[in-house]
Length: 106
Image 1 (cartoon, one colour):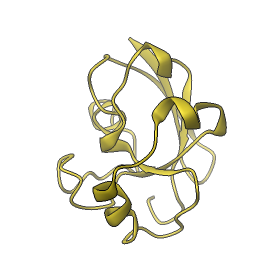
Image 2 (image 1 turned 120 degrees about the vertical axis):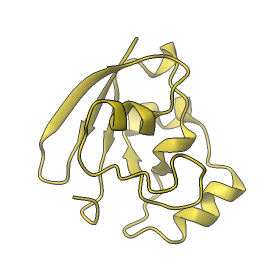
Image 3 (image 1 turned 90 degrees about the vertical axis):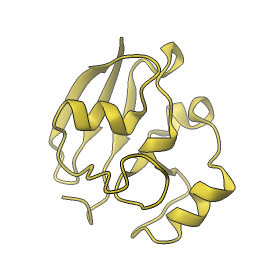
Image 4 (image 1 turned 180 degrees about the vertical axis):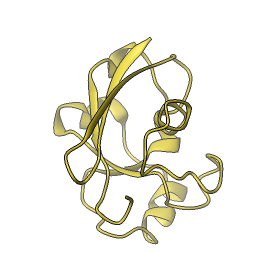
């Protein structure tokens, strides 16, 4: 299990354990983290699971694919560390990952 901290825009933190192999989005959904709607169910067809990845984990989470970048074009408040949480697979290297939710997702 990998510990992930989801931080809502108002600063509320949700630290949860997520099984390796799931996506960061699935971890949020399974633990009732508010602000991750995942309207498309993780198919990279919307941007309702947009998060900001903490700089310490930017390299570990990798770069977004072309498809993910296209979906991020529809998200509000995109920053260089923006990712769709459905596209980040949980593994041991992500233990301690911190992601922040944009203001538009509350």
